[in-house]
View 1 (cartoon, one colour):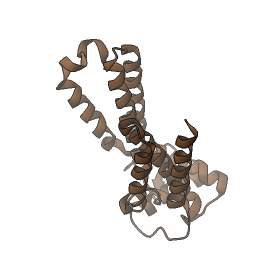
View 2: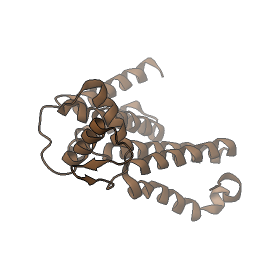
View 3: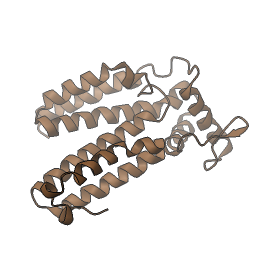
View 4: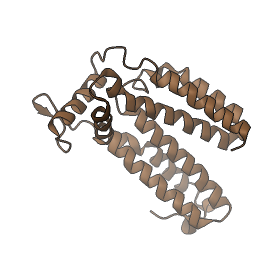
Length: 216
C-alpha cells in the first residue's frame, strides 16, 4: 500500500479497536444467547469436553462449536472474566472492519470510501450490540466469513473476465473453505451467500462460460 493508503488502514484499525474492544468487559452478560454460549464455553474450558458441549445437566447442540472452541483458547490464555469471554468477538469485529474497508476499496477504488464504510459500520448498534462484536455469540464470526466470501467472489469474477480459469477455480475453492468454516460457526445460515452465488451462476451460464470456469 502507499503511505496514504496505509494511513487510512491504521485509522480503520484504531477506530474498530476502540468501538469493538474498549470497556468490553465492564457490563453484565444478562440473559439470552450470550449467556447461553458463554456457559457452554465455560463448561468446555473446565471439563475439556469439546465434542459434547453442554449446558448444566444437558447437551447443547443448538449451534456448531467452532467459534466456542476458539473462545476457550482465549479464556485459557487470559483466565475467566467478562473481558476474556468477549475478547474473541471484539477481535473478530476488528477483522470485519478491515474486510469491509478492503471490499469498499475493491469496489470503489477509494480508501476514503473504505473509511466512510467502516464509520457507518461502527455507528450501527446492531453490529456492536445486537449479536455483534461486543457480544459473546456466533454472529460476528459468521459475518467475517461472509465478507471473505464476497471478496473472493469479486476476485472470481475478475479472473473469469480475464479468462484466467485457474485463478477463478482457486477463488471458488476459497469460497468453499469459508462456507465450510461458516457452517461450523452457525449452521444452515452459512449457506445464504453460497445459495446466492449458485443462483447467480445458474442464471448466467452464457456470460460465465459455465462449462469451462466452474466446477462443483
